[in-house]
Image (cartoon, rainbow, N blue to C red):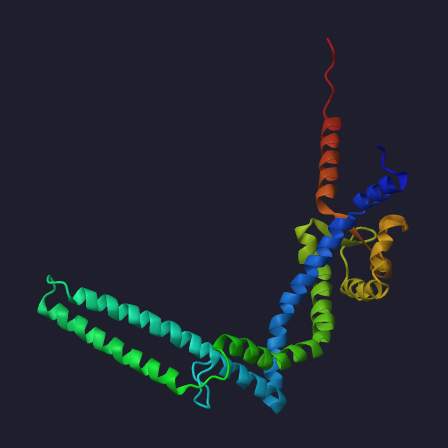
Length: 276
């Protein structure tokens, strides 16, 4: 069964313009930007907490949720989990030490050391059990852990959302502009063998790089139509390509063409053998 001509033409057009390759490269770049923005958010939140008490409280509360003992002398849910595990490990260690103490081949010095170790472990066990007895829990510690961490981190999550423009403007603009200016390749484009060049094939200036980065905003604002233009516009240009007068080339394909030209040139320069 033959495929419809329109589908064949669309598939050919997508292959010629590296449409899927460009799309995946842009997706990878968005992931890289998200990772790069996380340290910036942390630094920003820390800086805000120095001047604004509103940001200091959640930091202290999060510290309290993961601390072994909070300031109000109640064990946190995570602390309870750690103490329970420690108690179990110490009980097993004491039991093994007592079994070893029963062996007759131990000399008096080894017995003394082992007995001392058992006494120290039992003292630690008693301290842990005492802490757990004194702590009062209204809910099971697993539920409290989920609830407390959820409450304490909610403010942080809202703050990150509030300053989301930093990633969209500051990090994204710096990332794309510098990548286009320095080598014509973002990390995503480098992974997929693509490069941004000017229409005449030359390197982008800093202004061209900024224009193309700003052009992404226009392409995105039109429900991705600016990106899809590559499928029907002459010379396979997206909206941001038109704004910055750039184009995207595939390096492997270009290198292959250059290699073929070089081979043809070498062959043509060799003197032909005269037939006998």
